[in-house]
Image (tube, rainbow, N blue to C red):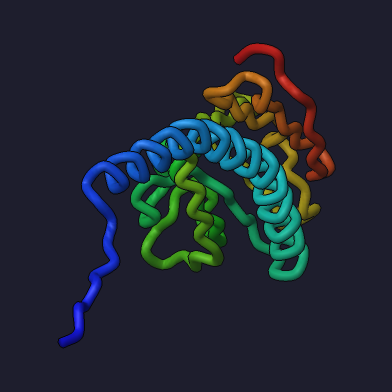
Length: 173
């Protein structure tokens, strides 16, 4: 007759393992949030710079006005919705709105989780237009303000009259 031994955790061992895992998780989660907040702050400038470069190139190549505007629905321009993302399109009638007959060139979904994004531009217009004649954002220069929930990640992203971007840290938003 064989005696079969079953190897298993006792209830006490199981509770101890769960407690150790809970302690490790409670220590690790804040570090993950800080890490992802840092990633988001680093990537926001790169994404805006890429959109500006792309828009400028398309305006020069197509000889059309190219608009970057905020959008939450990604179907039309919606003021003050930069946190969700933005649209890049050919603005043939120069009304700074995406109309059914206009070509949508790019959708950038940001879905920011660790901060807010706001555009403060010349003439208080909530979009950026790259002109067909010069491929420059004349009249659309200004700054993006990324106000992170953790202040050390806040930054200002300048858009110059020539369409170049540069970034500087913000101490307060």
